[in-house]
Amino acid sequence: MSERLRIALTKGRLQEQSVALFERAGLDCTPIHHPGRRLIHALPDYPLDVVLAKGPDVITYVEHGVCDLGIVGKDTILEKGGSFYEVLDLGFGACRFALAVPEGSEFYSGYRTRTIASKYPAITQNFFRAKGMEVGVIKIEGSVELAPILGLADGIVDIVETGATLRANGLIPIETVANVSARLIVNTASMKLHKEQIQDFILRCQRELRKEV
Ligand code: PRP
Picture 1: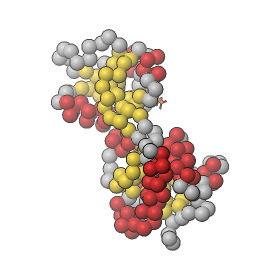
Picture 2 (picture 1 turned 135 degrees about the vertical axis):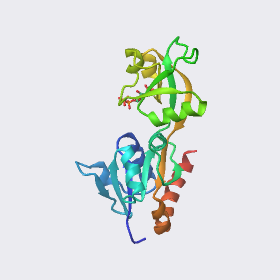
Picture 3 (picture 1 turned 45 degrees about the vertical axis):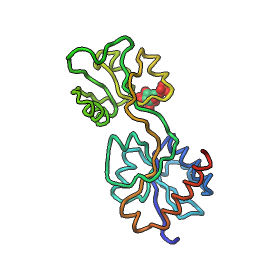
Picture 4 (picture 1 turned 90 degrees about the vertical axis):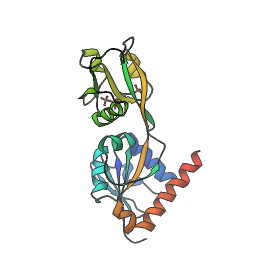
């Protein structure tokens, strides 16, 4: 293996779990544990440079081929789309997207066009389009649970992990929109150009994931 591969990791929780997986797979990730303000780290004993980025940017870097590989949530993939290979479900970062409404409200009754607030407008539109139901979608940047409380929306489409945030704000999940988890993605050209190196990396990850089952 001569050339170095470059992988973009989604900063934060997925980054921690990705690094834990790499370490179990035998990669020395010491530089990532002491990052300072650096955003790119060369692993000392494996030809891999690790870039830390926000989820949507992971996709952008992989699509443009400046990173060969990426680890990003399926939620971001569903929302942003793009052209790349999705090669592995890494299992971690698992949670679900749900449609949640204020407790006691009759979301599906009546003919009024419903308004949904979400950080993920494309996922929300696609979900209702598949049902043949027209809704208005309002993009919210965070704490989406506020939108129904403030009277801006009839419901929300958001990530539910423990369900605590919904409960604390008087909302109940009424439908699962999608189950999501972290995925390993690969640039389409890199897959051909660096086939052996990429396969070696995928196999190392796969071996560790199989041990977990
Ligand atoms: C996410 C999500 C929910 C909450 C769900 O928000 O948007 O608000 O976590 O977790 P729970 O089911 O365990 O309560 P995040 O913490 O990312 O903050 P944000 O809404 O401000 O983006």
